Length: 237
Ligand code: URA
Figure 1 (cartoon, rainbow, N blue to C red):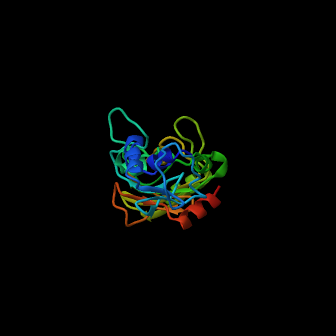
Figure 2 (spheres, rainbow, N blue to C red; figure 1 turned 90 degrees about the vertical axis):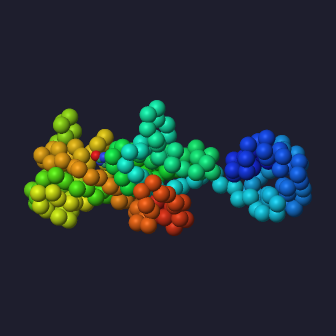
Figure 3 (cartoon, rainbow, N blue to C red; figure 1 turned 180 degrees about the vertical axis):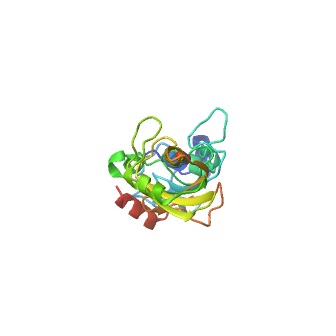
């Protein structure tokens, strides 16, 4: 890879700004000052440094976000802010995208990455990656609903869902539940409750496969997925 591309990709400025750094003799490759922007380097085998500090080459970025409501799970939108708009310029530089969609009003765990293979594996219906949601429901959720979800419910378009695991946390006129499903149909949780005559009034995703929402993340905050979390997640493939 060209030296200027590597440095620009790693967030050291535009190619033009990187040229200035090279001119200033700020860049070394294996300890030798390099001024040639076009020099070919292997970032994994060679030691590239700026002002003596090693430039670590990263190809993929993996972020866990606590998605806030009012923001779209997409890379671009004509009207609303997207989850990508919430990222800092360094993270945006990697051209990441959200893995799957949460509705505009849904909160909680969203994995954001530029690793297309991992995204594909997590979203593939064949992989049955479980997703757990916490929801507030207008209506009393009952044992009957647990049974109905375990058997699969018929949505308004005739689709019968795969079994879902429903746990009732509070069963009153306004209920609280956790629901684990292994598919990701459009508005699935909301439509499953509609199928049993109830309405989701608040929805938050708690986990996706082995990845669990970090409770210390406030709405709109994100952090890098740790190596441990990533290994487990890749193991989910
Ligand atoms: N199910 C829904 O209804 N909405 C979401 O955002 C996610 C799952």
